[in-house]
Image 1 (cartoon, rainbow, N blue to C red):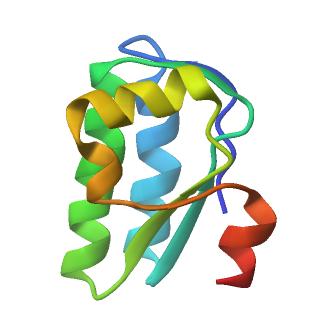
Image 2: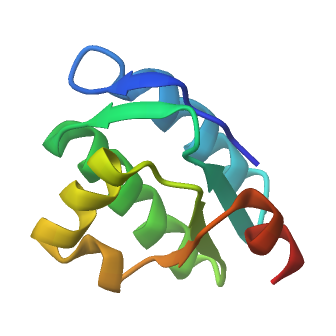
Length: 97
């Protein structure tokens, strides 16, 4: 489980990319990203999550997003990215799934 906080944009994207790619490299088959502390996500942040999702799926796993605030969820809805991730209303729901 990874919990990004604040803004996920071109200035901070590598701070999330590295631990997520590390999870995949270590063989994690299910990665949960707790988005409840994420206040903003731009296209760079979205691309980080999409890229890690592809790597995780290639390794037989997946990425689950949990607890997105409405402003962040809207970015996923507008781009259609909410259709390629497993999205949960809360961290508890993601962990129970």
